[in-house]
Image (cartoon, rainbow, N blue to C red; front, side, top):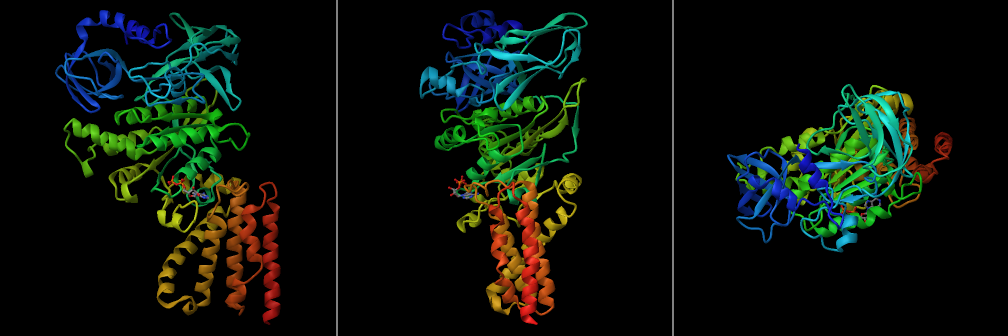
Length: 616
Ligand code: ADP
């Protein structure tokens, strides 16, 4: 990458915007492309010799950003990230010679960016409701000063990935400054104080020169950030949502997919995850179709509170939102921008959760661009590389040993992708391609939402492939019969589904005692355990110990009931036991008062004893 171009691109004009204007044209006169075709978000230009795949270019006098996605002889096809109205044949295309990069450094947290990392809140302040086409605003403020606190001393040797200091970016996030890739040497200067991101905070003497370290860096979005080693995802990532943690758990560094038909509680579940997931940093990518879907997110997110600290959730969140004036191609950029920012925080040794909503909109963008490139269509018109693209995105998740020779840093990036198949149809190619790569599937079902069962995650169709990998951790930290309880409960729910058919045909009374008991226990699991009210102060979050105790109580009740049924107690007496009310209300027991749930076990024993005395 030519320093001159990068300097020019980063130069600001009087109004503070990055400006690539006059000088740029003068320097690269010979290499200005000319548009020969415009088709929606796709522009084809000639005289593009010297450009490379995925290079960023600036189209027309508006300087609209685009990315080269196909090259043939001196022709390049460019996907453009803003409206192409008014752009025509013969208009210029300026080459930047560099790929799409994100800026990384203090200032990311609490930001709301568009797909190409333009800060929407700053743009709004400058231009109001409408984004001027081609406007370039630095993603990270160059003026703001941050208090840098060093964690290494003069004379220490450091190498790539080592933390040299941190900035208290928000009350919730310590933003570590790492030694950039490829630098190894001795710290000869390190400063303590207030700095802008472009000021030097340390100097490192490498083998052949002295490197100035600043707080800002850049990274090409399509390139995975490196790590030392990928580890086995054997730590659960608890979310406080019972159906998820107890039945379909996620692992730190894992991948999950949640399809969300309209009205099925997709927004609520996403907010719940953002609030309660056991992660240090949240990156939320909104790929909405309609402007108002995105507005909802933009309005609601800043209102959310981090439940643990009571501070705004935004203080550990980065939001990326496609604005409605951006054409489909920008969705692709937003997905890569988001995942790169998430990897950056992972590299500091954090647990990061990334939510992408919805990946279907991104896939539709791929379909549109591919159609315009006249590529051979695959399933339902999606390009043949749909699966590969989705896979390479989810591939960036993982729990890793971060690069650093100094310390053992473990960071994780967990990706949760929402999918919105048309009509909730799970045979949709995007759902199917996603299921091939993700390890957890939470099937949100409209029919559960109609019956007001929330979260509307189907217990019959969902799955998690992390049960085995987190087994050791969970059995040691929570309880050794954790998975026994889980599988017992699951098998009751499955049997209930089989019995329902029979009940429909012959009625409940025709069932045998044990079968009625199965139905009773399954109902208790559904209503007293799986059902969780996101809007109830206590019920909104269940720590894993509470979840375990609640489910254990129900299973204990069921097992006792079998014994007593076999010894002649009437099924209706069991159905009418008073302790059932206590079991049902266990979800409202305060999280610091969990021994109250243990007491229910004794009450179950006592009531059964009384029942037996009455019967015999
Ligand atoms: P979607 O985004 O899929 O269209 P929402 O997330 O807006 O659906 O949910 C629709 C409604 O369902 C919410 O307004 C709320 O009343 C209810 N709901 C969803 N999830 C829950 C939950 N976990 N607890 C209580 N109510 C819920």
